[in-house]
Image (cartoon, rainbow, N blue to C red):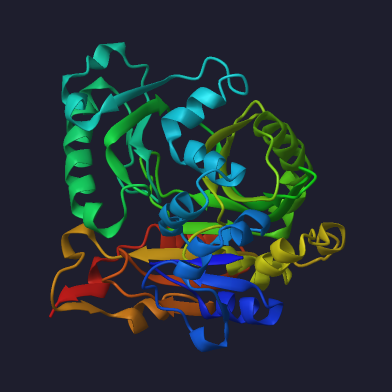
Length: 386
């Protein structure tokens, strides 16, 4: 069963659900391409017969769907674990045994300015205890930067509060935790009914500089998967055992440290990479992640990794600048941005009234030069007030 919700449902996802014949619930007023062709269940019908959801495989298109599941099947083990994972403070407490000695503290947003910065082992990252994307996330390198970071958080959370539900971004409880040095990886996958982990995607998150926390560029390539597939699978087995995960799809973010450890950053439950970005697997490897999940099969990674092609397949999440978000008369010069890329695979425009990300762009390159250039590209010239 697929639970669709705002802010964005891709045509690729809709076509996949049609081909698979998966029952679909539209949990809110999300725009759904080809909606009449789907096997639709109304939210009211599912509330009347929640057994269907308890028994079904569950995947959501967006964490905005979680409140619907919390309401309809509150006692489902997957939903109970989704609640745990969405609370980053509770998540940190739960994985103490996996990462002993890791520093984290929880504070109310209003109390951050009064925290004695001399007690904090910088560098740290501060983020909402319940959050999504890069909203309200800031890296603080030292005690001198603490007050400026607190001021930024107040402003950032206030500007985006109206765009997400409280169970997706809850800006009153903040987590201060160690900044983890290393390569940031994102893994899409699921645990099957026997608690075996299945890897669907391995992506590297690129950053423009040390303080960057944006989600602008992720990429995958054969050599990246080849390097990390086996150790990630072993890590996922230990992680899944710690939480007894079964029939559970996820988007997991980790840091791979210089001493060869995977340190979990967060697990986003019951979904894959957001805004349809998980679909980069189709372009890179011919993997339909929705097909794999609902049929409960693993991609043929052994065959995929024997291929000679090591092209870079990236996606860019292009955000409207904070000062222009939701401003009337916004003009976006998307065609000019399109011309910045050599080989565009798909260019998806999103509604700038739904999310601060106005476009998701999939593109191919021979190496990492182009993704790194787009990562550092000044986007201001592509936006204007009408």
